[in-house]
Amino acid sequence: MDRLHDADRAGDDDSSIADGISLSRRRYSRGGPPGDDSIELERINTYRLQQQLTVGSRGSRIPQDQWLPIGAGKPYPPPLPDSEAYVVEFEGADDPMHPHNWPMKKRVMLGSLLTSCALVTAYGSAVFATAASGAQKEFGFGEEVAALGTTLYVLGFSAGPTVWAPSSELLGRRWPLLLGMFGFDLFMIATATAKDTQTLMLCRFFAETYAPIILVQKAAILRRQTRNWGIHARQDELEIDFKELVTKNLARPFLILFTEPIAFLLTLYMSFIYGLAYALLEAYPIIFEGTYGMTGGTAGLPFIGLIIGEIAGSTFVLSLSGQYSRKLAANNYVAVPEWRLPPCIVGGAVFAGGLFWFGWTGWNSNIHWMAPTAAGVAVGFGLTSIFMQCFNYILDTYSKFAASAFAANTMMRSMVGAVFPLFTRQMFNNLGIQWAGTLLGCIAVVMIPIPLMFYLFGGRLRQKSKLAPVMDLLPPVEDDIKKA
Image 1 (cartoon, rainbow, N blue to C red):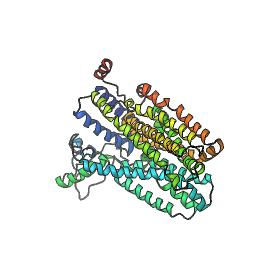
Image 2: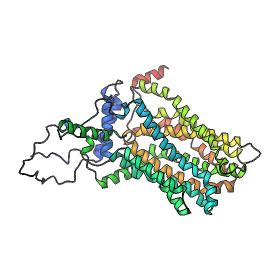
Image 3: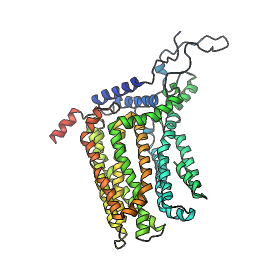
Image 4: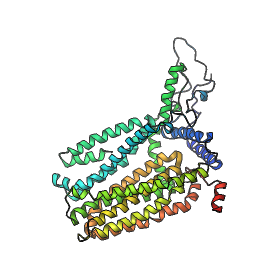
């Protein structure tokens, strides 16, 4: 009798990865008119490959040579005539159940909630810098220990993806997010009520909607409505193997990081920018409390300059979205990752200039405190322009493997960001504010060409990549560019 579940049906090995990439390369090179089924097929294939490569294997560990009896003397039922016909999918690109097609009101509400969560966690990483002096007086520790408040929090960002990333692929986005935010709230409350240094630092470290799950829920409803128990979602076919779960979610990010030049260089660039940003956060109290004699609460007001700069940077990037959309439409909706990088190049130059500005206006109390505060506008503008477009570049470049690329990026970036605050105070005290700011600015200047190099040569690097699909400009678009 034919087996209902064939272990050789779709094993999770390197050939499946190669097949997925090969399919993507053929689809992208072929293109297709906007609105055709290739977009939905690409979406379905993306979810299937992502599940197989991230969650588990469809190759079962249950013995296949000897079946358990059904019981009561019943014979085995016949195999499903075509198992693919019983797999639940979305009803085309306009299926209202798909999150992309939810009502605008619902998407805005969920987007606002997620944005608020991101805002709170980011705020928590920076706010301790302004409270460090008060914590030193309260608990009686030195500047080095005070820097650990920021360092340990950022290290939590590095450790978090190893737990929540696989959980979100297995359980969906909702429960890992709710559990993570619940834990974040508990440890933030514990931080606020800490009675000793150990409790404070421990709590600082631990303070850190998925379409396939929707199909699982849809299949469950259909089984009960039709009484046809063969109906299932693709996610139901996966057998969760803890060993594979660990190796896929822990090994693959490092594999991408150290074998993919694009991922490594871009992560290195973003890590140093991230580290410079946290070094700057540690420098704010040194300048505004030390140079200008502000109190702890008042010394936090100059951060408003950073906020204004980040809003300006976001506005700048969004203002170019129309131009990007026109390019995308002209290229049959095939994204070219390098289109994302011009704002990043501009942001890198502005960020470096802001660091020089900050250092050479904040060292002397005779210079008005508004000068280094205004420098924060340039720094915030550069940071936002760099990170928004670098994340988009990674997403467009690695497509199906973006989750692993993001995990690698987050881990390395957070580790580098955690190290910088440990020596920032000593550096500013020993070199002086102006020369320490100059050193940070020079490092930023050295890294300005990195996104420019990706803009010029990123396509060639992707052609040599095993994981990044090649998305070239279609011939009609190239002709239009030459005519222009």
